[in-house]
Each structure stands twice: as C-alpha cells, then as structure tokens.
Image (cartoon, rainbow, N blue to C red):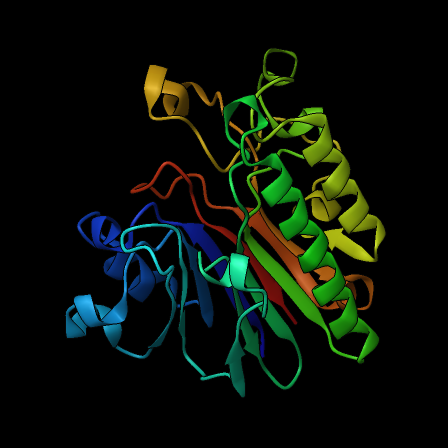
Length: 255
C-alpha cells in the first residue's frame, strides 16, 4: 500500500485553519502531514485542531509562544517521537523526529539566516547537527525522510531571480554550500530526482508584489531521503494550487 507524506509551512496553524486546512486534510488524506512554523502549543488549541477525524496530532513547540515550532498529523502513531537533542535548536522546536518501523521522518524548520547574515552561524550549526543526526540514523540501518522548510534555494533553478538574490537570506553561498554538503552525505532531493532541469517550480512566494500570481518564487521546501530509500519513492510533487500560506505543500508517495 502506498504511503503519502506531505509537508507544509503553514505560517501559523491557527491562521491556516481559517483558510480551509482541515477541509484540505480531509480531502487529501495523507498518511502523515508535517507542519512547520506551527506557532502554537497544544494546550491553547481547541479539540477539533488536536484530533481531526482520522488523525492524531503531535506537537513540538518552541519555548517562545507564537514562534517557530513543528507539528504533525498522523493516521498511524509512530513508535517513538523525539527531537534533535540539542537545546539551542530544540528550544525553537526546529526538528520533530517520528520513528516508524520502515522509516524515520525528520520534520524540520530550518532557521532563517536573516539580512546581513545575522543568524547565518546559527543556521549553519543547525544544518551540520542535522546532517550528523540523519547520517547517524542511516548508519544504524534506518531509512530517513527529511522534510520541511529548509529556507534554502539550493541552486539557481530553484528561484525565479537568482542573480538578484545572491546577497539575500536563503540564497547566501554559505547556505547553498551547506545544502550541497548535506546531499553529498548520502541524501537525494526527491523533487529534483523526478524533475531534473525543470525550472519554474516553487514552494514559497512573498506576500508582496503579487509574486504568487506571477510565479516569482523560491523552492525552499523539500523531501530528501537516503539513497537506499529513493527506489521506494513513486513520485514527488509541489501542490502550488493549495492556498492559505505564503508556502504551499510539497509531497512524496512511497510504494
């Protein structure tokens, strides 16, 4: 039976529910949907958001209320739920670890490096810690699915205006190099695997300048898997027609 895994930076889970999130969830029926920038703690949410029909919710909030955080809605509860195990990243709810029998899902919300590279060192430390963590799981014989908002456009093809953004957060050379190093550690960008060389595919658009209507965007949301698992990935896609956030969902299906 196929397994559908979706990932979406919802830019606030309370805001997205007003845009039809639960209707979308009911229609789409993913086995797992990983959320980033949830910006909520479960005790502040109504029951309908905690237990939508057919799903269990799992929460990894930041210590600072209304900020960052990751969460997931799952049809089948994982064997174990954890985080990265590094306080400076766990305090911001940056990584949620869902362990299943056949694979481990890493639901990540990469830091924004900000203008003038203000948080770039923090971000690069996160990418390094995550690379070692994911690689360690693979070395233990586990399959890894790393999904989320990476806040990095890896190559020029992954954003509409690369030359204009070389000195902007998300496309700093240091970030692109960190992404390349992560992939070189034995992981595959699933969307690019199925859509090599195809431009014009984006998952985030600024709310300004009607960027989404004009498709002036960035591909910064990913599903990456270890090389042994790529043979089980049937397809990977970007659901750019789904509205409600400045990001759209991205998905993979496993056979």
